[in-house]
Amino acid sequence: MHREKRLPKYRKIIDFIKGKITTGEWPIGSKIPSQRELAQSFEVNRSTVIAALEELTADGLIEGKLGMGTVVVNNTWTLLATTPPPDWSEYVRSGLHKPSMTAVQEINKREFQTDLMQLSKGELSPDMFPVDVMKQVMERVTRNLSGFGYEEPRGYLPLRQAVSDYVGRQGITASPSSVLIVSGALQALQLISVGLLHRGSTVFLEQPSYLNSLYVFQSAGMELAGLPMDRQGMIVQAIYARRKQEHGAILYTNPCFHNPTGILMTEKRRLELLRVCEEERLPVIEDDIYRELWTKEPPPLPLKARDKHGHVLYIGSLSKTLTPGLRIGWVVGPEPVIERLADIKMQTDYGASSLSQRVAEEWLASGWYEKHMQQVREQLVQRQEAAIQALKKHMTDLATWDVPLGGFFIWLKMNGKLSMMELFTAAMRQGILLNPGNIYGVTQEGYVRLSYGYAPIADLETGIERLSQIIRHLLKKHERA
Image (cartoon, rainbow, N blue to C red; front, side):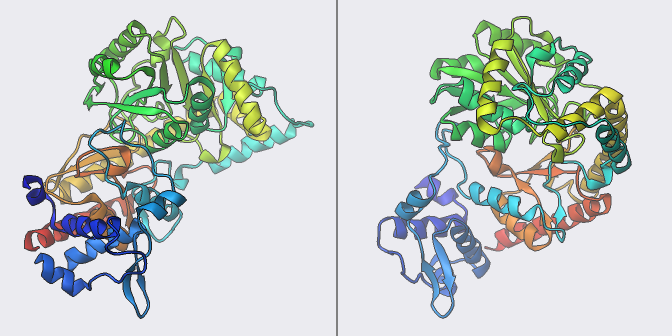
Protein backbone atom coordinates (compact mmCIF):
# COMPACT_ATOMS: atom_id res chain seq x y z
CA MET A 1 0.00 0.00 0.00
CA HIS A 2 2.87 2.34 0.88
CA ARG A 3 4.47 1.61 -2.49
CA GLU A 4 1.19 2.44 -4.24
CA LYS A 5 1.26 5.94 -2.76
CA ARG A 6 4.78 6.54 -4.08
CA LEU A 7 3.86 5.65 -7.66
CA PRO A 8 3.67 8.56 -10.13
CA LYS A 9 0.06 9.31 -11.02
CA TYR A 10 0.48 8.34 -14.67
CA ARG A 11 1.96 5.00 -13.55
CA LYS A 12 -1.18 4.24 -11.51
CA ILE A 13 -3.25 4.68 -14.66
CA ILE A 14 -0.95 2.35 -16.61
CA ASP A 15 -1.09 -0.33 -13.89
CA PHE A 16 -4.89 -0.04 -13.71
CA ILE A 17 -5.40 -0.50 -17.46
CA LYS A 18 -2.80 -3.29 -17.69
CA GLY A 19 -4.56 -5.05 -14.81
CA LYS A 20 -7.90 -4.90 -16.61
CA ILE A 21 -6.33 -6.30 -19.81
CA THR A 22 -4.27 -9.00 -18.06
CA THR A 23 -7.21 -10.37 -16.06
CA GLY A 24 -9.38 -10.48 -19.18
CA GLU A 25 -11.87 -7.91 -17.90
CA TRP A 26 -11.08 -5.85 -20.98
CA PRO A 27 -10.56 -8.38 -23.81
CA ILE A 28 -9.17 -7.50 -27.23
CA GLY A 29 -11.55 -5.11 -28.98
CA SER A 30 -12.77 -3.48 -25.77
CA LYS A 31 -13.08 0.29 -25.77
CA ILE A 32 -11.32 1.85 -22.80
CA PRO A 33 -12.70 4.88 -20.88
CA SER A 34 -12.20 8.29 -22.47
CA GLN A 35 -9.40 10.62 -21.43
CA ARG A 36 -11.90 12.78 -19.57
CA GLU A 37 -13.32 9.82 -17.66
CA LEU A 38 -9.86 8.59 -16.67
CA ALA A 39 -8.82 12.09 -15.61
CA GLN A 40 -11.87 12.38 -13.38
CA SER A 41 -11.49 8.88 -11.98
CA PHE A 42 -7.82 9.35 -11.01
CA GLU A 43 -8.18 13.06 -10.19
CA VAL A 44 -5.43 14.15 -12.59
CA ASN A 45 -5.24 16.47 -15.57
CA ARG A 46 -5.56 15.13 -19.11
CA SER A 47 -1.84 15.48 -19.87
CA THR A 48 -1.12 12.85 -17.22
CA VAL A 49 -3.68 10.54 -18.82
CA ILE A 50 -2.19 11.15 -22.28
CA ALA A 51 1.30 10.22 -21.01
CA ALA A 52 -0.06 6.92 -19.66
CA LEU A 53 -1.97 6.11 -22.85
CA GLU A 54 1.07 6.89 -25.03
CA GLU A 55 3.15 4.42 -23.05
CA LEU A 56 0.50 1.70 -23.34
CA THR A 57 0.25 2.41 -27.07
CA ALA A 58 4.04 2.12 -27.40
CA ASP A 59 3.80 -1.25 -25.60
CA GLY A 60 1.34 -2.41 -28.26
CA LEU A 61 -1.57 -2.99 -25.85
CA ILE A 62 -3.96 -0.26 -27.00
CA GLU A 63 -4.54 1.72 -30.18
CA GLY A 64 -6.65 4.67 -31.27
CA LYS A 65 -9.25 3.59 -33.86
CA LEU A 66 -10.98 6.12 -36.09
CA GLY A 67 -14.61 6.43 -35.03
CA MET A 68 -14.17 3.97 -32.14
CA GLY A 69 -11.95 5.74 -29.64
CA THR A 70 -9.10 3.85 -27.98
CA VAL A 71 -9.43 0.06 -27.92
CA VAL A 72 -7.48 -2.94 -26.60
CA VAL A 73 -5.56 -4.53 -29.49
CA ASN A 74 -3.30 -6.97 -27.61
CA ASN A 75 -2.98 -8.75 -24.31
CA THR A 76 0.08 -10.31 -22.69
CA TRP A 77 -0.55 -13.68 -24.36
CA THR A 78 -0.70 -12.31 -27.89
CA LEU A 79 2.41 -10.23 -27.28
CA LEU A 80 4.27 -13.27 -25.97
CA ALA A 81 3.26 -15.24 -29.03
CA THR A 82 4.66 -12.67 -31.46
CA THR A 83 7.67 -11.13 -29.68
CA PRO A 84 9.58 -13.14 -27.06
CA PRO A 85 10.42 -10.69 -24.26
CA PRO A 86 14.02 -10.14 -23.19
CA ASP A 87 14.99 -11.92 -19.99
CA TRP A 88 16.20 -9.10 -17.74
CA SER A 89 15.46 -10.89 -14.45
CA GLU A 90 18.99 -12.18 -13.93
CA TYR A 91 20.53 -8.84 -14.86
CA VAL A 92 18.51 -6.50 -12.71
CA ARG A 93 16.72 -8.24 -9.87
CA SER A 94 14.20 -5.47 -9.43
CA GLY A 95 13.26 -5.45 -13.12
CA LEU A 96 13.70 -2.91 -15.89
CA HIS A 97 11.37 -0.22 -17.18
CA LYS A 98 9.52 -2.15 -19.89
CA PRO A 99 9.14 0.64 -22.47
CA SER A 100 12.91 0.63 -22.98
CA MET A 101 12.60 -1.91 -25.78
CA THR A 102 10.16 0.36 -27.57
CA ALA A 103 12.50 3.31 -27.05
CA VAL A 104 15.41 1.43 -28.62
CA GLN A 105 13.36 0.58 -31.68
CA GLU A 106 12.20 4.18 -31.92
CA ILE A 107 15.77 5.50 -31.61
CA ASN A 108 17.02 3.12 -34.31
CA LYS A 109 14.36 4.40 -36.70
CA ARG A 110 14.75 8.07 -35.85
CA GLU A 111 18.55 8.23 -35.99
CA PHE A 112 18.33 8.57 -39.77
CA GLN A 113 15.92 11.50 -39.73
CA THR A 114 17.71 14.66 -40.82
CA ASP A 115 15.07 16.91 -39.24
CA LEU A 116 15.97 15.79 -35.71
CA MET A 117 18.79 17.13 -33.54
CA GLN A 118 20.81 13.94 -33.04
CA LEU A 119 21.92 14.05 -29.41
CA SER A 120 21.77 10.25 -29.26
CA LYS A 121 24.20 8.99 -31.92
CA GLY A 122 27.37 7.37 -30.65
CA GLU A 123 29.45 8.04 -33.73
CA LEU A 124 31.51 10.78 -35.35
CA SER A 125 29.85 13.60 -37.25
CA PRO A 126 30.02 13.35 -41.05
CA ASP A 127 31.88 16.68 -40.80
CA MET A 128 34.83 14.76 -39.33
CA PHE A 129 34.94 12.14 -42.07
CA PRO A 130 38.25 12.56 -43.96
CA VAL A 131 36.83 12.48 -47.49
CA ASP A 132 39.98 13.65 -49.29
CA VAL A 133 42.28 11.23 -47.50
CA MET A 134 39.82 8.38 -48.01
CA LYS A 135 39.86 9.11 -51.73
CA GLN A 136 43.66 8.91 -51.71
CA VAL A 137 43.54 5.65 -49.79
CA MET A 138 40.99 4.16 -52.17
CA GLU A 139 43.09 5.30 -55.13
CA ARG A 140 46.20 3.61 -53.74
CA VAL A 141 44.26 0.43 -52.99
CA THR A 142 42.71 0.25 -56.46
CA ARG A 143 46.01 1.13 -58.15
CA ASN A 144 47.59 -2.00 -56.67
CA LEU A 145 44.47 -4.11 -56.93
CA SER A 146 44.55 -7.55 -58.49
CA GLY A 147 41.91 -10.23 -58.48
CA PHE A 148 40.68 -10.95 -54.97
CA GLY A 149 38.12 -13.27 -53.46
CA TYR A 150 37.53 -14.79 -50.04
CA GLU A 151 40.26 -14.19 -47.48
CA GLU A 152 41.73 -16.80 -45.18
CA PRO A 153 39.61 -17.47 -42.06
CA ARG A 154 41.48 -15.06 -39.75
CA GLY A 155 41.40 -12.25 -42.31
CA TYR A 156 43.66 -10.49 -44.80
CA LEU A 157 47.22 -11.13 -43.60
CA PRO A 158 48.61 -7.62 -44.30
CA LEU A 159 45.74 -6.15 -42.26
CA ARG A 160 46.38 -8.56 -39.40
CA GLN A 161 50.04 -7.51 -39.49
CA ALA A 162 48.99 -3.84 -39.44
CA VAL A 163 46.68 -4.52 -36.46
CA SER A 164 49.50 -6.41 -34.73
CA ASP A 165 51.78 -3.39 -35.16
CA TYR A 166 49.04 -0.97 -34.10
CA VAL A 167 48.10 -2.75 -30.85
CA GLY A 168 51.82 -3.20 -30.20
CA ARG A 169 52.01 0.59 -29.85
CA GLN A 170 49.33 0.23 -27.15
CA GLY A 171 51.52 -2.20 -25.22
CA ILE A 172 49.91 -5.41 -26.52
CA THR A 173 52.14 -8.16 -27.86
CA ALA A 174 50.24 -10.10 -30.51
CA SER A 175 51.44 -11.77 -33.69
CA PRO A 176 49.17 -11.74 -36.78
CA SER A 177 48.15 -15.31 -35.97
CA SER A 178 46.62 -14.02 -32.70
CA VAL A 179 44.41 -11.54 -34.59
CA LEU A 180 40.97 -12.17 -36.11
CA ILE A 181 39.41 -9.58 -38.43
CA VAL A 182 35.68 -9.17 -37.80
CA SER A 183 32.85 -7.08 -39.26
CA GLY A 184 32.77 -4.66 -36.33
CA ALA A 185 33.01 -5.12 -32.57
CA LEU A 186 29.41 -6.29 -32.29
CA GLN A 187 30.18 -9.32 -34.45
CA ALA A 188 33.11 -10.09 -32.17
CA LEU A 189 30.70 -10.32 -29.22
CA GLN A 190 28.34 -12.51 -31.23
CA LEU A 191 31.13 -14.91 -32.20
CA ILE A 192 32.36 -15.13 -28.60
CA SER A 193 28.82 -15.74 -27.34
CA VAL A 194 28.04 -18.61 -29.72
CA GLY A 195 31.58 -19.98 -30.10
CA LEU A 196 32.99 -19.97 -26.59
CA LEU A 197 30.20 -19.74 -24.00
CA HIS A 198 27.74 -22.38 -22.91
CA ARG A 199 24.07 -21.47 -23.05
CA GLY A 200 23.04 -20.33 -19.58
CA SER A 201 26.52 -19.06 -18.72
CA THR A 202 26.76 -15.86 -16.68
CA VAL A 203 28.34 -12.73 -18.10
CA PHE A 204 29.53 -10.17 -15.53
CA LEU A 205 29.40 -6.61 -16.87
CA GLU A 206 29.13 -3.00 -15.79
CA GLN A 207 25.76 -1.70 -14.71
CA PRO A 208 24.73 0.27 -16.74
CA SER A 209 26.20 -1.22 -19.89
CA TYR A 210 26.21 -0.86 -23.68
CA LEU A 211 22.72 -1.85 -24.80
CA ASN A 212 23.76 -3.87 -27.88
CA SER A 213 26.11 -6.03 -25.83
CA LEU A 214 23.17 -6.86 -23.55
CA TYR A 215 21.06 -8.02 -26.48
CA VAL A 216 23.88 -10.05 -28.04
CA PHE A 217 24.55 -11.97 -24.84
CA GLN A 218 20.86 -12.50 -24.10
CA SER A 219 20.12 -13.71 -27.62
CA ALA A 220 22.77 -16.38 -27.10
CA GLY A 221 21.05 -17.53 -23.90
CA MET A 222 23.48 -15.90 -21.46
CA GLU A 223 22.55 -14.80 -17.95
CA LEU A 224 23.66 -11.24 -17.11
CA ALA A 225 25.01 -10.09 -13.75
CA GLY A 226 25.45 -6.33 -13.41
CA LEU A 227 28.34 -4.98 -11.31
CA PRO A 228 28.19 -1.44 -9.86
CA MET A 229 30.49 1.39 -10.95
CA ASP A 230 32.05 4.44 -9.37
CA ARG A 231 34.10 7.22 -10.94
CA GLN A 232 37.10 4.89 -11.28
CA GLY A 233 35.20 2.24 -13.20
CA MET A 234 33.78 -1.16 -12.33
CA ILE A 235 33.83 -1.89 -8.58
CA VAL A 236 35.99 -4.97 -8.54
CA GLN A 237 35.17 -6.20 -5.03
CA ALA A 238 31.58 -6.77 -6.17
CA ILE A 239 32.85 -9.70 -8.24
CA TYR A 240 33.40 -11.79 -5.10
CA ALA A 241 29.82 -11.49 -3.88
CA ARG A 242 28.29 -12.09 -7.31
CA ARG A 243 30.68 -15.00 -7.94
CA LYS A 244 29.13 -16.83 -4.96
CA GLN A 245 25.63 -16.32 -6.39
CA GLU A 246 26.38 -16.97 -10.05
CA HIS A 247 28.52 -19.46 -11.92
CA GLY A 248 30.27 -16.76 -13.90
CA ALA A 249 31.76 -17.77 -17.20
CA ILE A 250 33.24 -14.49 -18.39
CA LEU A 251 33.53 -10.77 -17.62
CA TYR A 252 32.78 -8.06 -20.18
CA THR A 253 34.12 -4.54 -19.66
CA ASN A 254 34.26 -1.28 -21.62
CA PRO A 255 37.06 0.47 -19.65
CA CYS A 256 37.82 3.47 -21.90
CA PHE A 257 35.15 6.17 -21.94
CA HIS A 258 32.48 3.71 -21.00
CA ASN A 259 29.18 3.66 -22.87
CA PRO A 260 26.92 5.17 -21.56
CA THR A 261 28.57 6.85 -18.54
CA GLY A 262 31.79 8.12 -20.19
CA ILE A 263 33.85 6.84 -17.23
CA LEU A 264 37.54 6.06 -17.80
CA MET A 265 38.76 3.14 -15.69
CA THR A 266 41.86 4.18 -13.74
CA GLU A 267 45.22 2.44 -13.89
CA LYS A 268 44.83 1.24 -10.29
CA ARG A 269 41.37 -0.18 -10.94
CA ARG A 270 42.58 -1.98 -14.10
CA LEU A 271 45.36 -3.72 -12.21
CA GLU A 272 42.94 -4.68 -9.46
CA LEU A 273 40.39 -6.02 -11.95
CA LEU A 274 42.96 -8.14 -13.78
CA ARG A 275 44.29 -9.52 -10.49
CA VAL A 276 40.84 -10.52 -9.22
CA CYS A 277 39.81 -12.06 -12.56
CA GLU A 278 42.99 -14.12 -12.69
CA GLU A 279 42.47 -15.16 -9.07
CA GLU A 280 38.84 -16.14 -9.77
CA ARG A 281 39.73 -17.70 -13.14
CA LEU A 282 37.24 -15.39 -14.79
CA PRO A 283 38.16 -14.71 -18.45
CA VAL A 284 37.80 -11.12 -19.65
CA ILE A 285 36.40 -9.51 -22.81
CA GLU A 286 37.93 -6.03 -23.11
CA ASP A 287 35.87 -3.85 -25.47
CA ASP A 288 38.25 -0.97 -26.23
CA ILE A 289 36.62 0.68 -29.22
CA TYR A 290 36.69 4.21 -27.73
CA ARG A 291 40.36 4.19 -26.66
CA GLU A 292 41.59 6.67 -29.28
CA LEU A 293 38.93 9.26 -28.44
CA TRP A 294 40.75 10.84 -25.49
CA THR A 295 40.59 14.61 -25.12
CA LYS A 296 43.32 15.48 -22.59
CA GLU A 297 45.83 12.64 -22.37
CA PRO A 298 46.01 9.00 -23.51
CA PRO A 299 44.22 6.49 -21.26
CA PRO A 300 46.05 3.86 -19.20
CA LEU A 301 47.36 0.78 -20.96
CA PRO A 302 44.74 -1.80 -21.94
CA LEU A 303 44.08 -4.74 -19.64
CA LYS A 304 45.42 -6.88 -22.48
CA ALA A 305 48.79 -5.13 -22.26
CA ARG A 306 49.14 -6.46 -18.68
CA ASP A 307 47.84 -9.92 -19.56
CA LYS A 308 50.62 -12.50 -19.23
CA HIS A 309 48.47 -15.64 -19.30
CA GLY A 310 46.12 -15.23 -22.27
CA HIS A 311 43.33 -14.25 -19.89
CA VAL A 312 41.93 -11.34 -21.94
CA LEU A 313 40.19 -11.21 -25.32
CA TYR A 314 40.74 -7.72 -26.73
CA ILE A 315 38.30 -6.05 -29.14
CA GLY A 316 39.07 -3.01 -31.30
CA SER A 317 37.32 -1.32 -34.22
CA LEU A 318 37.47 1.50 -36.75
CA SER A 319 33.72 2.18 -36.50
CA LYS A 320 33.88 4.83 -33.77
CA THR A 321 37.08 6.50 -34.90
CA LEU A 322 37.13 6.43 -38.71
CA THR A 323 33.82 5.22 -40.16
CA PRO A 324 31.28 2.49 -39.36
CA GLY A 325 30.83 2.03 -43.11
CA LEU A 326 33.98 -0.09 -43.44
CA ARG A 327 32.60 -2.64 -40.94
CA ILE A 328 36.10 -3.57 -39.77
CA GLY A 329 37.15 -4.56 -36.27
CA TRP A 330 39.45 -7.12 -34.66
CA VAL A 331 39.80 -9.57 -31.81
CA VAL A 332 43.18 -10.26 -30.22
CA GLY A 333 43.57 -13.38 -28.07
CA PRO A 334 45.23 -16.78 -27.62
CA GLU A 335 45.73 -18.58 -30.94
CA PRO A 336 43.42 -21.55 -30.14
CA VAL A 337 40.62 -19.12 -29.27
CA ILE A 338 41.21 -17.06 -32.41
CA GLU A 339 41.18 -20.23 -34.49
CA ARG A 340 37.86 -21.27 -32.96
CA LEU A 341 36.29 -17.82 -33.55
CA ALA A 342 37.64 -17.75 -37.11
CA ASP A 343 35.94 -21.07 -37.83
CA ILE A 344 32.63 -19.74 -36.49
CA LYS A 345 33.01 -16.56 -38.56
CA MET A 346 33.59 -18.56 -41.73
CA GLN A 347 30.39 -20.47 -41.01
CA THR A 348 28.60 -17.16 -40.49
CA ASP A 349 29.65 -14.93 -43.40
CA TYR A 350 32.83 -16.38 -44.97
CA GLY A 351 34.87 -13.38 -43.92
CA ALA A 352 34.73 -9.58 -43.80
CA SER A 353 34.77 -7.61 -47.06
CA SER A 354 38.09 -8.11 -48.88
CA LEU A 355 37.99 -4.55 -50.21
CA SER A 356 37.26 -3.06 -46.77
CA GLN A 357 40.13 -5.04 -45.29
CA ARG A 358 42.54 -3.64 -47.87
CA VAL A 359 41.33 -0.09 -47.23
CA ALA A 360 41.70 -0.57 -43.47
CA GLU A 361 45.21 -1.96 -43.92
CA GLU A 362 46.22 1.10 -45.93
CA TRP A 363 44.91 3.43 -43.22
CA LEU A 364 46.73 1.64 -40.40
CA ALA A 365 49.99 0.87 -42.21
CA SER A 366 50.45 4.30 -43.83
CA GLY A 367 50.28 6.35 -40.62
CA TRP A 368 47.25 8.27 -41.89
CA TYR A 369 45.08 6.78 -39.17
CA GLU A 370 47.13 8.37 -36.37
CA LYS A 371 47.10 11.75 -38.16
CA HIS A 372 43.33 11.47 -38.59
CA MET A 373 42.89 10.73 -34.89
CA GLN A 374 44.81 13.86 -33.91
CA GLN A 375 42.32 15.93 -35.90
CA VAL A 376 39.36 14.03 -34.46
CA ARG A 377 40.53 14.66 -30.91
CA GLU A 378 40.90 18.39 -31.57
CA GLN A 379 37.32 18.56 -32.82
CA LEU A 380 35.99 16.45 -29.96
CA VAL A 381 37.55 18.89 -27.49
CA GLN A 382 35.65 21.76 -29.14
CA ARG A 383 32.41 19.80 -29.20
CA GLN A 384 32.71 18.71 -25.59
CA GLU A 385 33.46 22.27 -24.45
CA ALA A 386 30.41 23.56 -26.34
CA ALA A 387 28.17 20.90 -24.76
CA ILE A 388 29.49 21.50 -21.25
CA GLN A 389 29.12 25.26 -21.58
CA ALA A 390 25.53 24.84 -22.76
CA LEU A 391 24.79 22.51 -19.84
CA LYS A 392 26.28 24.97 -17.36
CA LYS A 393 24.25 27.80 -18.83
CA HIS A 394 20.89 26.06 -19.05
CA MET A 395 20.83 22.98 -16.80
CA THR A 396 22.91 23.59 -13.67
CA ASP A 397 19.78 23.55 -11.50
CA LEU A 398 18.20 20.64 -13.38
CA ALA A 399 20.92 17.98 -13.55
CA THR A 400 24.40 16.93 -12.48
CA TRP A 401 27.18 15.45 -14.61
CA ASP A 402 30.90 14.70 -14.75
CA VAL A 403 33.07 16.03 -17.57
CA PRO A 404 34.37 12.95 -19.41
CA LEU A 405 38.05 12.60 -20.33
CA GLY A 406 37.17 11.33 -23.79
CA GLY A 407 34.60 9.49 -25.89
CA PHE A 408 31.25 10.92 -27.02
CA PHE A 409 29.01 10.76 -23.97
CA ILE A 410 27.85 12.88 -21.05
CA TRP A 411 25.80 10.99 -18.47
CA LEU A 412 23.19 13.33 -16.99
CA LYS A 413 21.46 12.70 -13.67
CA MET A 414 18.25 14.71 -13.32
CA ASN A 415 17.64 16.44 -10.01
CA GLY A 416 13.84 16.29 -10.12
CA LYS A 417 11.53 13.29 -10.31
CA LEU A 418 10.76 12.78 -13.96
CA SER A 419 9.88 9.83 -16.20
CA MET A 420 12.67 9.43 -18.75
CA MET A 421 10.26 7.88 -21.23
CA GLU A 422 8.03 10.92 -20.91
CA LEU A 423 11.08 13.15 -21.43
CA PHE A 424 12.19 11.04 -24.41
CA THR A 425 8.76 11.39 -26.05
CA ALA A 426 8.45 15.11 -25.31
CA ALA A 427 11.98 15.80 -26.60
CA MET A 428 11.30 13.92 -29.83
CA ARG A 429 8.20 16.02 -30.41
CA GLN A 430 10.41 19.08 -30.10
CA GLY A 431 12.88 17.73 -32.66
CA ILE A 432 15.47 16.26 -30.26
CA LEU A 433 16.58 12.63 -30.13
CA LEU A 434 18.33 11.46 -26.96
CA ASN A 435 18.89 8.17 -25.14
CA PRO A 436 17.04 7.58 -21.85
CA GLY A 437 19.10 5.74 -19.25
CA ASN A 438 16.52 2.95 -18.97
CA ILE A 439 17.78 1.26 -22.15
CA TYR A 440 21.17 0.62 -20.51
CA GLY A 441 19.82 -1.41 -17.63
CA VAL A 442 19.52 1.49 -15.17
CA THR A 443 17.08 0.51 -12.43
CA GLN A 444 16.23 4.02 -11.26
CA GLU A 445 14.74 6.93 -13.15
CA GLY A 446 16.53 10.15 -13.93
CA TYR A 447 19.43 9.34 -16.28
CA VAL A 448 20.00 10.52 -19.86
CA ARG A 449 22.93 9.88 -22.20
CA LEU A 450 23.83 12.88 -24.35
CA SER A 451 26.23 12.48 -27.27
CA TYR A 452 28.34 15.42 -28.45
CA GLY A 453 30.08 13.45 -31.20
CA TYR A 454 27.57 13.66 -34.04
CA ALA A 455 25.34 16.75 -34.05
CA PRO A 456 26.68 20.10 -35.34
CA ILE A 457 27.86 22.37 -32.52
CA ALA A 458 24.98 24.75 -33.18
CA ASP A 459 22.54 21.86 -32.67
CA LEU A 460 24.30 20.87 -29.45
CA GLU A 461 23.83 24.34 -28.00
CA THR A 462 20.26 24.80 -29.28
CA GLY A 463 19.29 21.24 -28.37
CA ILE A 464 20.51 21.50 -24.78
CA GLU A 465 18.74 24.84 -24.30
CA ARG A 466 15.53 23.41 -25.71
CA LEU A 467 15.93 20.28 -23.59
CA SER A 468 16.17 22.40 -20.45
CA GLN A 469 12.91 24.13 -21.37
CA ILE A 470 11.20 20.76 -21.90
CA ILE A 471 12.40 19.48 -18.52
CA ARG A 472 11.18 22.61 -16.73
CA HIS A 473 7.78 22.29 -18.42
CA LEU A 474 7.44 18.62 -17.45
CA LEU A 475 8.47 19.26 -13.85
CA LYS A 476 5.89 22.04 -13.51
CA LYS A 477 3.25 19.83 -15.11
CA HIS A 478 3.89 17.08 -12.58
CA GLU A 479 3.77 19.56 -9.72
CA ARG A 480 0.29 20.58 -10.84
CA ALA A 481 -0.91 17.02 -11.51
